[in-house]
Length: 412
Ligand SMILES: C[S@@+](CC[C@H](N)C(=O)[O-])C[C@H]1O[C@@H](n2cnc3c(N)ncnc32)[C@H](O)[C@@H]1O
Image (tube, rainbow, N blue to C red; front, side, top):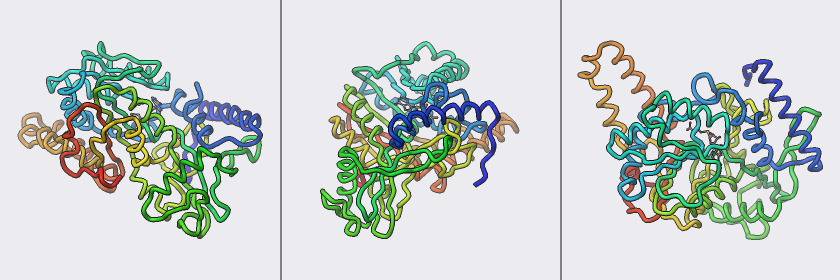
């Protein structure tokens, strides 16, 4: 795939980051794990994709997320959060708030529903995004900015509702391969001074145990605890099976889950159950890069200038929540969750002919745009089926609005 060329200033930043990672690889004896590489290309201060100055979200960025696409997404989320505010403190903790658009929309919608947030806490690892979030909320929801605060560290106790949209996919993953020789970890080495390449080494105990547990739990194969025997498992029997495992995302769910007192945690992301994620035919994993609205698999291209991401194994996320002692409140597709939260009714009200007739052509154009965006959120071919929503709770009733119909907890 031919990718657009970045400008000269961006190339300078990317070369500086490449240099830093190359020095790190040399210091570590010629190899670093892919999780270490992914951490640096995304979060290296001043140079990483999320830590650098480039615009990431929206039409001028590299990808569009649901809250950027339509205000209806925040509105639907508000219905769910409002229900939970009836049983928990009216506090939202948003992790990885991106441009701040979801926060602005959610704050306004909660206010309109008569269940305003008393406090809206944002945990964001990127300093440049914090600034952008502050600007967005001040511009789109100026009356609500007074309740927003940015936290430097994870709160020791959270009472309220935790949310994260496309958060887990941005957390570094470890890459593994299974072939006739067994299990290996796939990491990164240098081929020239300025060019990265894949390189394998023996898997350590942590990775071996995690992969054995993950694949061993699946019904379509049964690797022996000790050998990950490729012929028996279907993994690597006809070549190399490569995939990744999101141990950092799982650890994050456990940590935040333990901090959750009375309240809920809702996570939205692209991914599947382990059975689909680790299907033997998905033998190249799910790792991809996003650059100017193109999705491609060269994750070493222009470090720091493109997003690098992996899908989420929601079975592992469900397990992590259970380990933290949380109740699983639901798991379903984004389209089902949005419909359960009233998206179609809201859309009909906003785009009714009476409304368009009263306000003229501009309203009709806006209505058509809203319908188009809702189609992208719901369509099976776009975000509706690939994106999933999972919710956990502590001390809440098991009747979360978004999972009233089409709950797929049983598939995890
Ligand atoms: C793909 S973006 C999604 C942004 C936004 N939620 C949206 O939907 O538009 C991922 C975000 O997660 C942030 N992030 C990644 N790891 C994080 C962590 N451990 N804690 C808080 N934020 C994190 C990134 O800096 C970035 O803002």
